[in-house]
Image (cartoon, rainbow, N blue to C red; front, side, top):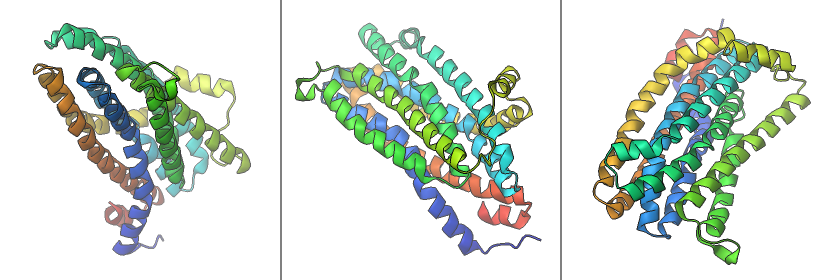
Length: 327
């Protein structure tokens, strides 16, 4: 019989787990905050391009992250149930969904100028913001691949990996923004908002590559307990059936999470379109505080993620009492 742990134990364990997860989630948007700060030094119009171009894309990114949060729930349940060999199928199915959702967001980014004009934005701002949206869009698949791999690492008990990698790429982002956005050291002409977002998108793919490399190293060293390594035929089979039964569970759990986060994040994004009607200066002024407020929202998502992991493990163990206390 499973022994129920006291409330103080669950509080302590949740906060220990939550801290690196909250930092990692916040760091996803700290990149956008740095982009906004350094683009602001290029002028109000460039910041207006960034504000209008990035706001709806961040809303879509948050929705996508919500849809993929079911990954950590399912992995946590597998670990709690003593079935680590199930992690590989969950991770592969989640990667398939991350790629599909990322491709959809990229496709949506191509319609940005039409959407901007349809909402009554100034033609020049609509075009400039659309270029920013596209630069953000091609980085979203990389970010979602990072997110789903990091969710898996967090759920198997390695939450610091994503935190360290995201803090590292944020530091690199400051330097690259200085070079490509502001023209530091004379190495590049100032590129404004487009250069800022393009740099961040490149680093999102870099974050995924670093996380995947770490994951594969620990898998090989640990004897592939989680059944991560699989022949191409297994990948192809799962791709053809959208992850199969595991993919269905990802969608059933992920859709409500995506909808909840979508309602909240879309409300933030909608205000940006209203601000755009007031001119580039008002739009730029709106962008700065809204970027910081979104960071608070991501902290809450991080805490929710830690709670999901702890509850998921309790579900896997079949400990009803721990499910209620951990939640």
